[in-house]
Amino acid sequence: MNILLAMIPAFFWGTTYAVTQYTLPDWPPLLLGLLRALPAGILLWIVKPSLPSKDYIPRLLLLGTINIGAFFCLIFVMAHTLPATISGVGMMSVPVIAMLIQWVMYKHPPTASKLLCGLLLIACAWQLFSPSSLALSHTGLIAMVTAIACMISGSLLTKKLGTSLDWWSVLSWQLILGGTVLIPIIFWQALHQPQSYLSAIHNMSSMNMLGLLWICILNTAFAYGLYVWLLQRMSVVDFTFGGIANPIAGILCGYGLMHEVYAPYQYLLMGAMIILSLLPQWLELRKQKHSNLPHHAATSH
Image (cartoon, rainbow, N blue to C red; front, side, top):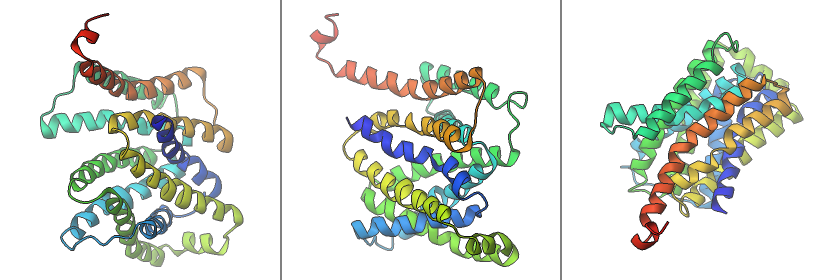
């Protein structure tokens, strides 16, 4: 049941790209990053107010800058420059890059199954993102790779900080501080490139408002709140399986909202990437459950 619940925040996160393209196509990514992060962080703080000590502020500021400020803006750059389906599926390559970072930086070599799945995932991504297969924006692809790097480094910082500070404070304050960091950058950009900001404000429509409510309230405040609540009740490995809803949401919303249609072999490559990204966690979970069985039960088959 918890894994089904874990699919809810993952699904909302997967809708980001298509919803942004459909409802907020010309809005500056920096502004969207601010409007997604800061109001959501304030709402979560109101639900459970907290005030971390000053010793935690620098670490929360660094975490908010990487995991929220930079990451959210890069997500919206992807939403404006890449097909929603490709963005959703492409982010499933996170486990491969995380595996490489752990191998190179922390000297934790991957298991044979992780290495094999990683190599196969890279092969599928190479075929799917090949210029002969799809014409994709270089800006969008760079944003995707950078967003993945931000997600991984942010996750490592979050895990480290979560050992000494409660999850809810980490979540709400990284959203608040991550959004706040964007304010002076937005002012600077608005002074030098005012047209996109003026156009967004002057041409505000009900569709824009619906899009903002979706990405701020449902996509961020609700989804991240549910994410934190679930992490207290299930393992990270178990929660990972809910992530399958993320690329599925990208594919469905890309088709339903943006009418993105691909060849059958491209959908097969997408499906293979999704399965390969989850397979190592599934094998690890199966191994853990098997090792936890009583010896006589484990050897009776």
